[in-house]
Amino acid sequence: MARLRLSLPAQSDLAHILATSSERWGTAGRERYATVLAAALRQVAAEPEGSPTRSRDDILLGIRSFHLCHVRGGDPKLKVRQPAHILHYRAVAPDLIEIVRVRHERMEPSQRVSGESEHGT
Image (cartoon, rainbow, N blue to C red; front, side):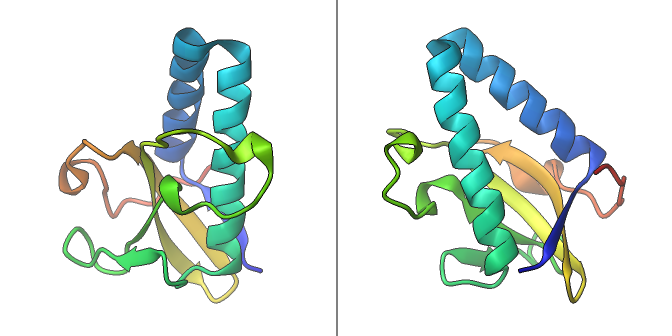
């Protein structure tokens, strides 16, 4: 399993997504979505080029995407009716995946994903 690194924009995206989830669906909804996000991150780390991922070289060379609707698992905490976010990421080393952005599926990714690597955690 590869290690994950979150860019500063991705950290900001996640904070905004979870704050919005809390406002709209309360603490329980926020926790469910946080669980789905965490499972998606683990899945990308385990299989960065797995079948539910897509090459997004059309956005930026080396970028891949993973829609949260593809999160696997039978855990009831992973039950979110319509997860609406996409992880945009790239391999920066053989054992390191950088999550570049986490964007809503309705956002145009080519205007939101940049080649700048702003390191976070």
